Amino acid sequence: MIPVSLIESTADTLMAKAAIEIPDDYLIGLKEAASTEDGDLSSFVLQAMLENYEAAKQDRRAMCGDTGVPRWFVKMGNEARIEGGPVALEAALRRATASATSSVPLRPNRVHPLWRTDHNNNVGIGAPEIEYGFEPEGDWIDLITVHKGGLFGTDYRMLFPSDGIQGIKRFYLDSLMAFGKRGLACQPAIIGIGLGGSKDTCMVLGKRAACLRTVGSRNPDPRIAALEDEFKELGNSIGMGAMGFVGKNMVVDAHIEVGYCHTGGMQMSVHAFCLSSRRAVARIHADGRVEHRTDPDWFTPYQRRETAEWEPAQEAAE
Amino acid sequence: MKLREVILSTTPTPEEIADLRLGDVVFLNGLMYTAREGVYMRALEEKANIPMELPRDSAANFHCSPAATIRSDGSFDMGAVTATASFRFAKWLPEWMAKTGAKLIIGKGGMTSKDYKSYFVPNGAIYLSTVGYGTGALLGRGVENVEAVHWSGELGLAQAMWVIRCNRMGPFLVASDLDGNCLFERENAKIVQNIEHIYEGTKPAVLKRFGETDDRSEELIG
Image (cartoon, rainbow over all chains, first blue to last red; front, side):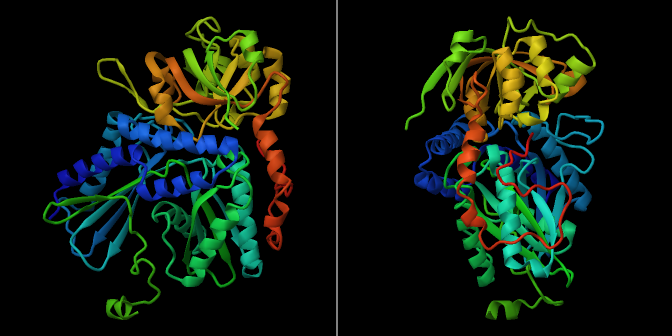
């Protein structure tokens, strides 16, 4: 039984880590970008960002003043049991979000869409979002928080099979161009692309592709992995860099996630996880051990399963 | 090419502003205030009295909501500071400038050269862009003191008018000049000259959407 107090204290720690510490995989990706950048303005921007990550860690202050919209992804092993059940879990995550907003501090970004009411704690109707996933083995629970910026870099389009790969490429390039101008997308970013599903799940797939995979990871389908390489290269060939200045680096990495869709459609979404790619992860074991990491490891074989029954033996044999 | 660094007051002289060139790196000293849609609507549409003496105290309007909180003893904890995208505030800025004498508009992404020519230049004002975005921790280090926060009860912490004493706060980039030139448009114009090859072979979607442009040199924000 995992105590709810441990969930809340771990969540509190994760909120601060996400806001302050740039994940290593993104940092390495950005350093690589900085080493290839030769535009004078875009190079200056990348160097300033690298200094900024250090300043944030030294001072224990948020890396960006726009601390995004905190949200939670919860992954549970099939044997995990939580004291007080899922309602207690959700209350703990909402309390941690509120308390970290003043203790870090974070920007209280969350307001009512119409009345603009601000509780000054990033909690409100539907906020923070809490999404769930499950794994067939284990008595642990993974808490993942993502503080993604919210306004620019995301788009959706219903494409059709006749649009093909060339149609996908065009929408991808248009999204990068439109939101890259003036650096509205805060690039170089991790670009997540969702393909298929339904309109809503396509958005979810793309967002998770951007936020829940690490720089350098590849889709297990080799043809999709090849597309990821191609899209990274394509985005970096536009000639646009940080802040929309002339440069070589728009895309730190490109991730594609797919879901089965209606036979007549080919939904597509594009998401940009920005220069402050904030995510933090902890696994809480049933015995009370807490292990921190930065890789959400969300997209397991189980999450991407294609069959009615889960057959781990078959999966292992592949 | 190394970019030129300039230390600038938040109440700059006309000569100091005239000396700035696109792409200069600026660090600011003095008082600045945050104002975005909440402050603009309250001051300009609801006609509330602006709780500062402007531009005497500050001619620097930061489009910003800081990551900050008011402690229970009334003191402030300001961590990171970054800008929000400015183009959305174009409808209020001409009146705001006329009313407050703002000379430095600081934010994210700049405005169009049309904005600069029509009301920045006549007011002797220029635009400073934050860098990144955003260098929130570096800018946070430039906060010497939080002097006040106005209208936090009415507008919430994110939209409130924060008054910040800056000590070499930066970096910022000069994104407009007194001729109304726009740094971002200059860069966009260079980039679109070379994009044909990346679009080669791609094709428009079979189902069109209303209101789109296919002119990729469009600034999209105007």
